[in-house]
Image (tube, rainbow, N blue to C red; front, side, top):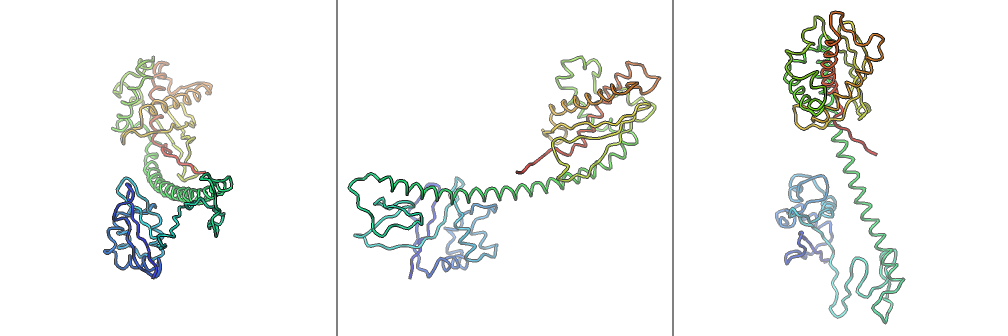
Length: 360
């Protein structure tokens, strides 16, 4: 009856218990015996982990999954040793040779440096040589065989990695889309209140945190802007004292994979007293530092971008920024600063494109 070697190798290589010989009719019979009697094979199966997306060992999979002998042999061929005490498990048929006629073989060349044919079979009789140096033909044959083996193994592994990455990427994108859809639902509720009067945001803790982070940035500390909006204390703000609302009608696009891109813009119609304008404000890519507010640098950049587009919109108007004849030019200037803060915050709120994945 044929013999089969059961090899299990850890990160340090072979040890005295690495090889076990068994008699069996075939590899399938060995695999079936493992499935039927996993406790007998526990030492070899317990620390063998196939290199796939499943983090369970072979021992756990045999107990939990409905594996066939072919499935098990495939998983065994995917095991590799690593630094986490995982072992590589292999099963090979054993070829018995007489000691006085032994010929040791390696993956590419036997000990006589015989030619390796493209088919992978050895020639019937090795060509004698009077020198230990391999001939050009032998070197090229070995090189061709090595090149073929490399292409076969590495290309296959790269394709498997690419396929696993594509699957994981798709799963993450689907998970992200669920969050984006839920965010859109909540923002859709908020936009109805903004259309009535966006000043309802001013006293929320979230806006207060945002404003505190914004006013701590360099643009406020080292420029003339610190004299125009010196405090986060809303009792000194002009917007809350207006006799008319600040109405923001924010356009909501249905979030999907086609609309998620890094060049997104928030479109809104802004109405403050006599002044009304349609704005299209580009969003700044946000890197969350914590759950309360985006990164400080991104907050500053979004404020600058919003202020630039608001300024361009005002300059395009024949009468500029005229909210009420009862307000002075100084008050109008202060109102622009305060409105920029509010619009920048709303733009960040409605920016659903915090994370963007691309796939070739």
